[in-house]
Length: 311
Image (cartoon, rainbow, N blue to C red):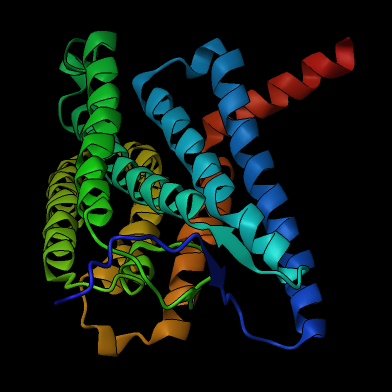
């Protein structure tokens, strides 16, 4: 009779970056700086949007959600990675591991949808400027943002349910620096084909669909910009979109390579580097892209610093 393997493993070892101890210390210092910059940069963006009334517009409302997602993203994965770099015991209990997986997928899906909403906002602002305040009213903005969060977490519950039905009996090692969903599935002692099919379908829906919508929006935006007679007008219109385009390119580019290309095209070590972009580099770069390329954000920062000097 076949043994009933329903018991779960209690903890797993995160192999992380398998390098010598000296390099681990260097990576700990480097990633600690990046993590601090991520929290600081996104925190400053979020604070400026909350405090400066001139930034109380739909564009910055959605940008505040992006900042929250980026801070949550990094906080979900990076602290455990940092502790493992300086610890001999690189283990994590299995339940927190599953929670890390759940939040990682949920935040990833939410960011995809928020980026789509932001591209739609730019499309309305440039292609239908006279109707912008009517179309993108606060009720619509709130519904779009709330729908992005709720839908992403509900979709992620499907992945969690499919994972919970599996028996996990080993191995007790994950060749990653956090509990990434594909790595967790390798711990199951049962067929995970259904999980992988649902994950791929979700990636097509959450990555492929939104990417097509974003490209469609910006194709129409480009046509509208080219029709603007004034060179200054074209420059101003493009400047409102260029920051978002940079973020979209970084995010969707990494996502497509990680989850929508054959596994043989990116071995496990490369997968770690790509995941690091999602967990740390992208969240750190996003506020830099928006602050360095956005005159309104820089203006808000100058006004805030001027008020501080006057106090």
